[in-house]
Length: 289
Image 1 (spheres, rainbow, N blue to C red):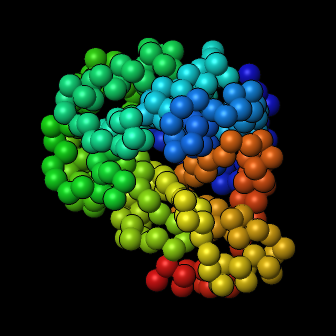
Image 2 (spheres, one colour):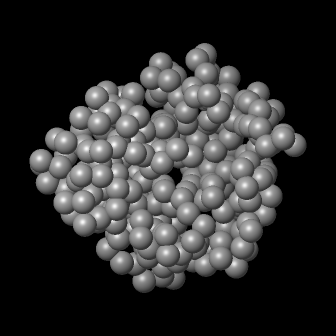
């Protein structure tokens, strides 16, 4: 059990599960380029336990991180898992020896990846599986019927609780919603990358969560004179402002910023509680438009 604090953003109903809108993304717990074990295994365990101790109930991972290593450290740190913890994972890609992310979305590929996630996390059912539909360049257009159909069958078999899609085009999101109950969409989105504005608004109206990956810009951190100006007015960091903007952008946005350091995790949580004014929001809104 943990003693939760009040996290910024409150909670959101993800399917039949209430989760903290401020979550944690575990990608950075693996080694360089998301390959190999954590550089500091004890530090990785401390980050995960601190996240849960702060009241975070949404952890995002994938067995492709490492591969296997990130899920295994999650298991060592958190199992037996708290009843209110939702662990989301992704399938649809594997790893090669060069650190690439080859697409792997045949029904056989996906069944194997689901079972890999079950084994490395040490559970009998995955809380949420996101079907990754793109590659490192972004979404790859095309029908997802066969791939999603395979996951729906695994859901019927009791191995998956909820389904989502990741790195998807608007057309693929619409197709997914027509084929199965989809509880979230996980796409690249942040202050400067706003291609999904209209999609997010529509999903909000449908009660579907939107989970932005690279909320702080990814490997190229967000940089903007307007962002720096708003941060200076509040005596805050630009990253705190960027996270706060996402939480205030719409109530269906769930954050999963990642870090491998406890101090950085605490900074992210504390910074996201910043309350932006309408003037701030107008100024920030112009960055991505």
